[in-house]
Amino acid sequence: MSKKSFIAIATIVALLLIGSIAYLFVTLQKQKNENEELQQLAAMDKKEMENEYTQFALQYDELKRSIRNDSLMIRLTEEENKTKSLLEELRKTKSNDAREISRLKKELATVRAVLRSYIIQVDSLNRLNESLKSENEQVKEQYSRATAQISNLTTEKQNLSDQVAIASQLDATGVSLIPQNKKGKTEKKTKNTTRFVVNFTITKNITAKTGERKIYVRVTQPNNSVVGQTGTVKYENSTIGYSAMKIVEYTGEEMPVTVYVNVGEFLSPGTYHAYIFAEGTMIGSGSLTMNK
Image (tube, rainbow, N blue to C red; front, side):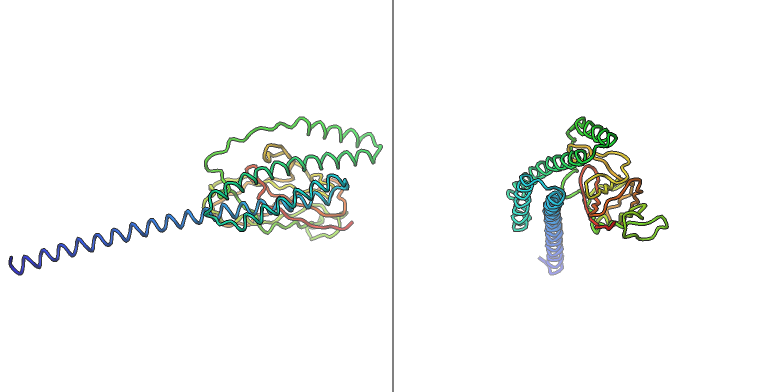
């Protein structure tokens, strides 16, 4: 074999070897990126579950503040402690522990259903107590209509698509509730308040679908009645009233949102709550205490 032939063959072999190494490197890098993406999605899934457990625990605490029934208070405390315990279990669980995450996700569904039943119980109890305190026939008639509406609410199962998962749900953070007077200035007293300004930020979520999204805001008084109710929206398997709705164009990136809620009724002093809903899920909440 001549020297030139040997060099040519050696060159070809070297090029093939380099090509093979390059292909192997690209393949391994692609697999690494895919694994990292799956880990990120699992971490987001776990984080969203933690947010829901935290929200549910806060809702139990809010419900306890609105009742004086000792037996119901005990049951609410037990459920609140159970929710906090499950939250701690979730925080100690690694996001790649699929079996444990699946178990805690089933527990989350149970907690959601139990909480929903207590919300309805407390709402009915508060309405009943208010009716018993007043002999005004007009108030009794309004309560009867409200009770009739509640009794006629239907529970329809939502057809969940493959895209509807905890990791793809929106999340509203930094929820603030700002009362304003008729001049548009910040107000501290309920008697001078003509509207609420609800500010929040929808966080970045690369797995959520983009496009138009309907955002519902529900502002409640200390007695859990809805401020400026303009319609109803499905939440879980129930229908609840909301104060305002806004359509936003979600791009998957972080975006600030402001919603205005007009006041047309008497406002009582105490703690007010703002709940943010999107696609049948509560994605954030905030509160504010006001003076008379």
